[in-house]
Image (cartoon, rainbow, N blue to C red):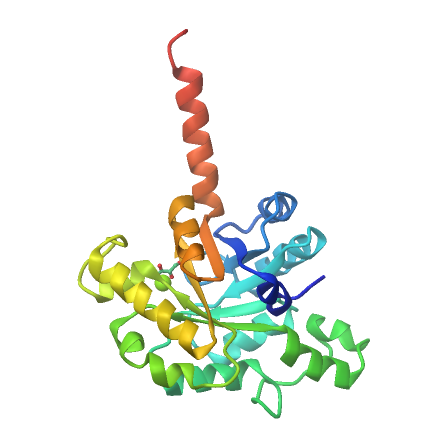
Length: 254
Ligand code: 3PY
Ligand code: MG
């Protein structure tokens, strides 16, 4: 299966967040053509034990499993990386030092200091040759950092100078709160901040990503050059399909 960096090189990629612990949902996301799912440990119920069946379901459906951890914590990142994920997504990166710490936690030597154990799923339970494991993980696993606060925005130029970041992900909801307009992701202040981040990424040759809760917004940001599009959340897609079905069922005889 192509990794995320290869898919990104070929054009925009589309995914959704997942806030369930149910592999059925993940398999459906793969079968319906998404590129990736972000298995959420920040605002979702998952931990390493519940993540494993989700990762297996994703891999068997051709879907890239990305895990959003709850914070920039090297031990948490290590446990997730050991499971054999396609990428990790780290919220609330605010400074160059945060970004450097993220690279250090996610990459093996010489780029970082990710903890080493060859008996984990990511190393095929020791069946993988050592050079293949270290170099392969460094090359294949995507590191995605969130810029979603006024401090991250101020420090973006310095953050973009850090080697080894694959996607700069804009969290419009946290950003809206940080800019004083919580939840108003269409507010001109938020839209201007998103445009500024996207433009800086473009100038730096970096891929930008964003969360959207409408397909129209996703297409708009894609057309503006954002390459990693996380549209909605599995439970939200399910809820809106259910609401639509119920409204249709209860509508008067026509
Ligand atoms: C945000 O909008 O803050 C996000 O992190 C998207 O999930
Ligand atoms: Mg956020």
